[in-house]
Length: 240
Image 1 (cartoon, one colour):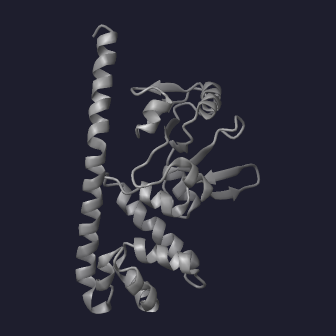
Image 2 (cartoon, one colour; image 1 turned 90 degrees about the vertical axis):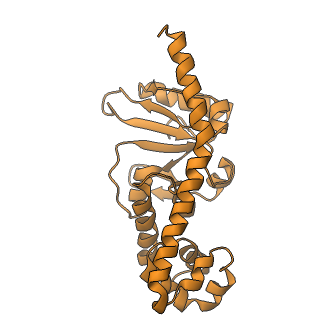
Image 3 (cartoon, helix red, strand yellow; image 1 turned 45 degrees about the horizontal axis):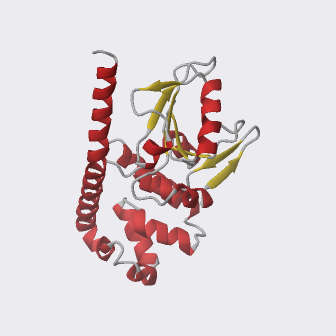
């Protein structure tokens, strides 16, 4: 992707590893800019990877801008079987140029990696899938333990709005009472972030998770219906 200058952000399990919340994944999940030039560069990279399209939809600006993911399986030597998934629009996140502007850049000895910013990755992980919620929790915890000694106000605000571990959320809220009060409207359950109300806070966090899962389910309903129509049309075109 870098060699072909594809404007893309690493997300998914591999991005979680960079943020200290290890999750083994052989898949490569990318958020990409849906433009003609960028898709041309992406197609060149996919050709080098000998990537074959998996199912529907096909790679196009139209499908990417509607929120679909496009999925490929690589066949080139060294990456046989690796899956590459690309998206451009993600629920709860702004358009790609804004996500790109606040990305995290990690420079290693052999390559530079452009990652989706941690707050954006957390938002992208809030899906209806069971496996994503433990990772959301680990991502935020890892960031907290890495930075709690000398946090910025931006980091404290992020923890107050996103922490999903009751004792840690209480710890942050108690140490930052003024900031906690100022953002309670954004996350009402912060009013429960007190030692005597840890059980109530845990219940409120579960309710918050259920609400996000339901929002994600509703978001995907029309997209899944469209995918089913595309699958049916393809089967008809194949004479099946």
